[in-house]
Length: 150
Image (spheres, rainbow, N blue to C red):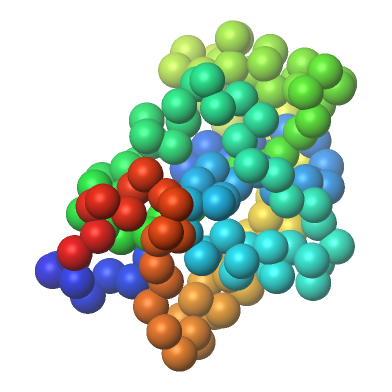
């Protein structure tokens, strides 16, 4: 498929519903006007939105959406969010240390099914909002990734 026919990428890889979804972590939140779309959807669902709380990990450029970004396609990666130094952050850090790319990363993991359901609803609403836009999503003028635009 030609890259020009793809208007956006919303990556949901490893959204980790390990605790209640109160906050949506969005990698690439302020890089394109997709950030406005996700903020609108989240507000409608009474969810907070946060940019990457650990930018030093460079997750936006180390995950599946980066192939789309390099092709000039505005992208986001979304996860169940948490504030630093909270019990939720401890749970996420423990999961990363003990389960990420480990044999214990299996179907017996703790999963908050309500958080998973809410996350899926966010993704669905966001997809419909993007599909119904009268214009194509675009990189923000100040975004480093704008240089990849076609």
